[in-house]
Amino acid sequence: MDTENPKTAIEYIHSLGRFSGKPGLHRIKALCEALGNPQDRLKFVHLAGTNGKGSTACMVASALQAAGLRTGLYTSPYLVQFYERIRVDGVMISDDDLTRLCERVTVACESLTLPEGETIGEFEFTTALAFLFFVEQECDIVVLETGLGGRCDATNVIKNAEVCVITPISLDHMAVLGNTTAVIAAEKAGIFKPGTAVVCADGQPNDVQRVLRRACDAAGAVWFGGAEDCRVLRCDISGSAFVYEGQGYTIAMPGRHQLQNARTALRALNALRERGWNIPTEAAVRGLARARIAGRLERVVDQPLILLDGAHNAAGADALCHAVDELLKMKRLHVVMGMVRDKDYETCVHEVASRADDFYACVPDAGERSLDAHTIAELARQSCKSVYECESAEHAIELALEHAKMNDCILICGSLYLIGECEKILRGRPKATD
Image (tube, rainbow, N blue to C red; front, side, top):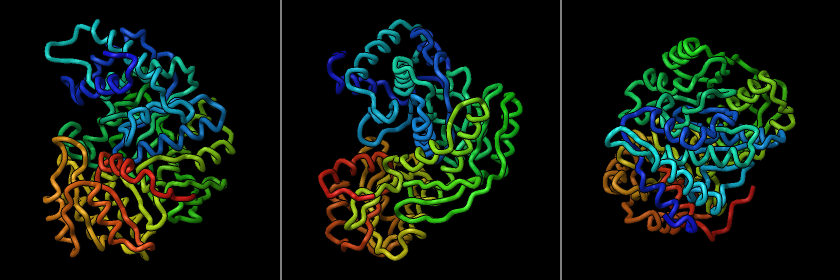
């Protein structure tokens, strides 16, 4: 591998594949051991869940950074650049650091003896690389998002966490995690460790709540919850204002679901304080106000209003539609939508198309996983009278812009692959203003 070429390094990482053998932690444990177990020198806030992980992680990390803590943030997937996944104090890993550490992890991989037919996968490789980077950067704490599930996720190689956070759980990745929310919850709860504080998002189904409580007790973890006082003052397309435990906060991420994520983040910060971390209230206020995450009802252009949202499962589509109903009810809505075939695309397309005045079906840049535009268009026609079948995301955006008036809204959704592609297409247009 050419370590002087970051493009080659990233291509190599992608070539490793999503799944690399039997589910388990044996590969990541072997790799981390070959690298000197860098994860053992770090402290973590560990997040699992179906929806809201990225937003909640971003809020927690922003507050910790505002408190003066050198904060690592590990998230997935990325939208536009691979570097987005690994940040310290909001700054993405550099080309030089990525290529240098990629070479180091590659050498470690070559030294391993793994079961026949198994190799180190892309997520395992990237997770180990991130641990090395966070150690080099002398992070005080790392906000660590699981990739898939929890129990067998590569991030679960860590021995302990200061706080484990569970965001809303719903049906997704059922072929890997199970086909009921209770079974999926048990997989997510696999990140619980003895003595760790466990924080859960509000509104979990009763069966999920029971599973999480039992798993917390069985792991010897400490349940950190309670019905905190929270009052919403404002919720509009620019974000929300609310009062939590008597303190006023604002967030720039629109939608009621982001208020839920903010409450979860604040509860996680409270749990950290209980464990001795110095996080002033003012830092939490500043951190939440500054927190931004791409592709979550992200406003990228103002006239016409263009929003990007990565909702790609039924629960995410439901949250998106509730936000559309509340925040965009006075606007004519043009929906550009593309999905991958291993999601519940029928439910998602029906939910979103039923809100659309015009619907533009396209294909995300997701390779063999991409769902064809014709299937999406046919499903959309069951709920929307004006449906266009487009040959590409660029064609769909051009058509929507041609049809939309200045006061209309263009919503691009259905897949993080599509959102990342459209971020690139829309570059150069006048940016939205806060």
